[in-house]
Amino acid sequence: MSLTIIKPGLLDTLQDQGRSGYSRLGINRGGAMDRYAAQVANMLVGNETREAVIEIHFPGAQFLFEQNTLISITGGNFNAMLNDEPVPLWHPIVVRKNTVLHFPGLQNGGRCYLAVHGGFCVSKWLNSYSTHLKAGAGGFHGRKLEKGDEIPFKESSIYFAGLLKPGKEYEALKWGVDTGSTYRHPNEISFIEGNEWEQLTHQSQQAMLEENFTIHPFSDRMGYQLKGVDLKREQNIELVSSAVSFGTMQLLPNGQLIVLMADHQTTGGYPRIGHVISAHLPKLAQLRPSDVIHFIKTDVAKAEELLIAQQQELNILQRACTERLNSMVC
Image 1 (cartoon, rainbow, N blue to C red):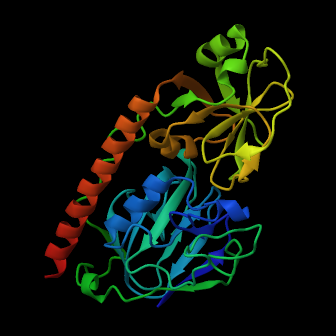
Image 2: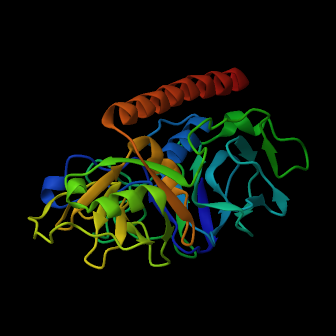
Image 3: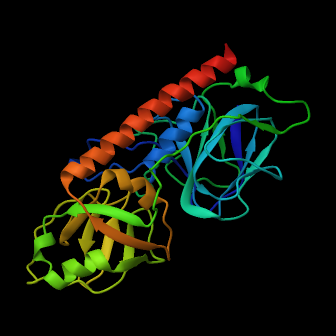
């Protein structure tokens, strides 16, 4: 009962919703870059939302399923195929034993997520399945997936095998998930003011809201380096290092911005110009190098309103997925 890596991808790791409570020890939360897509991937196969999923970057790996199972693929569109047949995203899919999943082309998005019914049987580190590459811990032996790796499943999907039609490698169930407003207007990213926002010159504040910024090729899971107009502070006051988080927008000495992502450091000494609102982190995570960002300033009340609405949507989706899956095996 496992999945085997036939061909490794650029950077494919096991991730979950991250490990909380260890920032004081210098260990960040980490976890999936797009936590929304990772949660929905688990919902579609009947898992708890904190189960481990495989985060796939393009070019993605090739996976061989060693048994019949129920899977889902969410997030970016990498033209997912089972053997040589295209499969839909955001749907539960019953897969036959010895079928190969691969990703031959990039349509959109920065990463996608693969979930299997029951989850992957890997050990937790500090209460999380997430791979921490720098520590070499969590996930699958603390590293990215490599050729020949066999990742066991926690349980069988025998209940869903009867949905496969004779001669078919897979069966995509007719129902799926509409992601609603989560990824709408993908290049528009809202933020709230950071501690050092007022230190920017008026011209720089205006430029932040009027100009576009491009994601630099050197961007990764630690942070997105942005290329755009040089931003300036009224005075170059040296700052004491302070806590930072997923979405913190820092001003570098060269006048350019960096947005911290899932594998960010826990403290930083650069000016914190703003913070990307939590509800927009999923669509930020789906942007790629050379993509353009247009920032929109908002306030805490609006940020909370959007996050609450997104969480309510997830709660509804989880109940709906559970009911549909239960009705198919009863």
